[in-house]
Picture 1: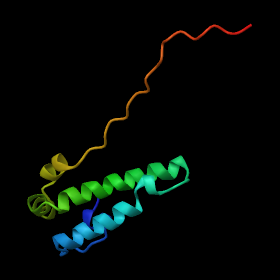
Picture 2 (picture 1 turned 120 degrees about the vertical axis):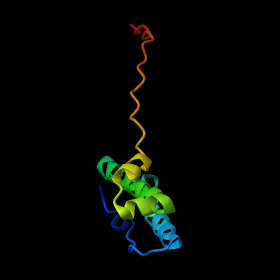
Picture 3 (picture 1 turned 120 degrees about the horizontal axis):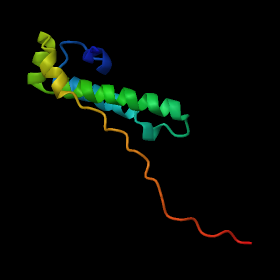
Length: 102
């Protein structure tokens, strides 16, 4: 499991305001929609980084989960982590094609 304090670039004694500010700043920096015309690979890396940020913020912004994380109770923390949405399968179109023009 990643060190959530390092992910959010805050110290272990950071208060909730500092954690929220760091999350908001990094969320904007790694938002795939704001990257413009970059390669799909960079968009994917940004999306992965964004998921890590969301997981770190979900744990450190909740006082109970943060206390469990700091105490090393990994079972509680892992159940609380946001999961990525499953990839959707492409929808296949089985309608017949129009006849070709001669």
